[in-house]
Length: 356
Image (tube, rainbow, N blue to C red; front, side):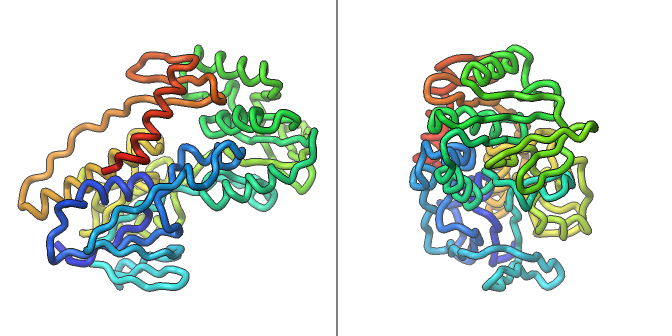
């Protein structure tokens, strides 16, 4: 195997790969990690960063240190497969082996001007920008959150706790919030939001966003807003599209990979996390598992062992509804109330403090 490994992204997939191989990196191998930040960030808590209930230090953890790991703080702009190079805004890095763990970006579904006029909680920088915008809002301002998935629901609930004078509206295009979860959870969450004076409007398809109004439905209704936050979906980081020439795209436009996460038609390039095809929906939990499995593949390769991946088993979903209650689905068991809050807090604490 090659001696110069380049890892793009130190999110959940990238960081779990690093911790898996950390104690066993051969003396002739060097790993270059390229990330736009100087620390690992806890993405499932970006909603709290944006609402103001957590500061930036609470959602960050230091990178693992090793004499054969180098960190490069840069924004990745291009992968040149044939030249074996990664082009960043300020650097060019050669690779013998490449691991793409760049995560995802907001998917605006071609809604006109959505990207221009909405805020986001999808990245650390965007969540910080959203928090600043929230802090500058006058009392009684209307905040519209587009999307009814996990991030949108958690952000809406936490925003209500931190800013009780805001008027908060959540728009979801399906007929219920958290559409992939059981009806019992959907009803519990919707009731909680509405009891918290959060307006929930379902079956709403946004058609256009301008600087003052959100336009929706075929009747071209509109809703004025002071701040609009987009949390309606994600798509793979666009830099990963260059790899589709050596693979295929699944229905979410993720790169199809082999069981060891290598491209099917090009050796020594691997993809994990939100950019990699999977039978499961993108999540931090899935990225973490894939990163560990890829790390085990590298360990087995270094030791001339056969790699036999274990089937991926997700433990479930956990969500906050403020400080006192939450919801979850763990091993097919529905959890409502304080217990899922406590469990999720423990999971995130363990990730931050015991990644190794």
